[in-house]
Length: 96
Image (cartoon, rainbow, N blue to C red; front, side):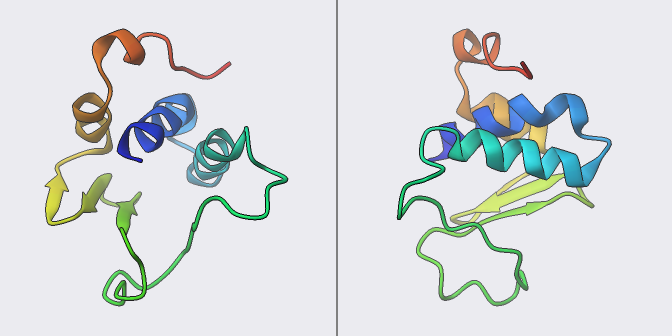
């Protein structure tokens, strides 16, 4: 789950200055192989103080450029990507 998200965020990184497009690219990357499937991803825009209904919430804050999950706070989206992607994968994932 975290590696998939890290790959999606790495793919969208060239458009990080355009938040709406960045989000679209990341979501498209996550859904690329299952866009027509009945089940798949639970992607929500919600109140970060009300995440109790989610099984494994991952909070991505594009304003502060941080990611939090399971009690872990990454100081930046870049540090989340680096932590969750081996360098061999990191070099092959990008915008295409």
